[in-house]
Length: 245
Image (spheres, rainbow, N blue to C red):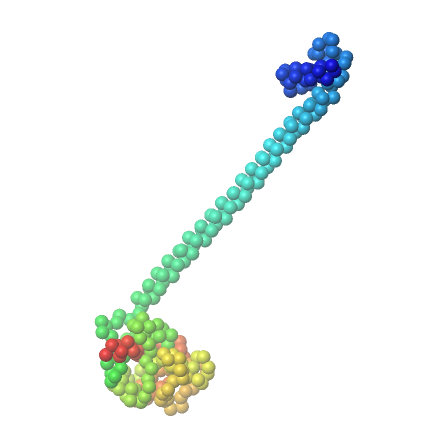
């Protein structure tokens, strides 16, 4: 009987409201004493559960807001990093463009070459520059642009063959250097030790002079070591033209 009354009251309670436990005077008069005392622990527990739910809702809402705030902060930081990265990329692109412009400008400083710059001398093809002076390394670049290399002289006969095409009192870079090991002269065209050297009197002088020129300062063309940074005329040799023939 008591169990039936208790369940009846619980059903009544659930039908009316879950917002707050009913007061004692809200129950029917016949069960005030017994019924309310029997149901009161359940009502108290329900009240506790409801408060816990309310606290949980407030806590979860607070945590959610905190997480959103943290997420917003993270997104803001990422946005700034992306902006910085984009600026760096733009800066890199600008530098690359400037470098390309500089290279293009530098290419304009290379001498205006004849449509057929190479001439056959003996069995070889040479380009003899006699207007623009370059450093030894600059001469390498010009010859490379022509699809050639600094002349690699193999004999006295080759020197004599081109001597009549050279200016008097002038120097012309050739492909010989001892930049890698002092006193060990190699042909930069072949990578091997120079097979032929015809030095001027009292040459080579060594010291800081590591690049070799063919000069006509004292009459017939002979070899002399000089500073690689000195600006001289130069002679290019084309193997490609030789192979075509």
